[in-house]
Length: 137
Image 1: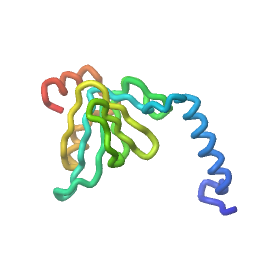
Image 2: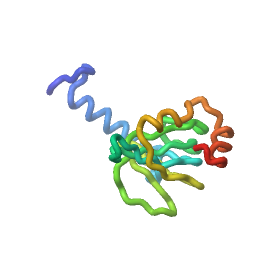
Image 3: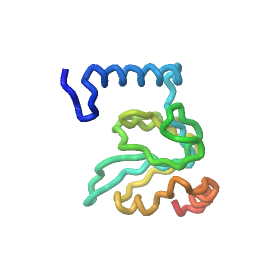
Image 4: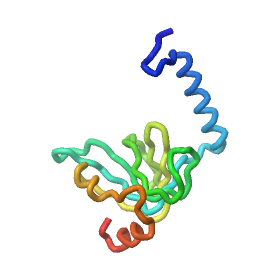
């Protein structure tokens, strides 16, 4: 058994992963997406004119994990390129699935420009809603 930098062996890490999966299954027995977003935007991020990754951001209305709180404005980790039903968009990252409900947007934007447009985590959801409705975001 090899040790990694956390001081735990391979078997210890496998056991922790197994326990995490079991805990997620207990919280989500029907296997629904773990995070639900409203006022969402699916962003294709570009660098030098080429799309390098995709993320989705929006206001959390439900979260079955401890990653986010309801009402928080979040940006997902990098998303996998998976097909989804346009009437029920579900975006998939390495650990979470994000269901996008209600009206949303899809944009292509440079990575640097997106950072300047994303609201901070303490931003007011009502202000964001007004910006979305006015077309600012």
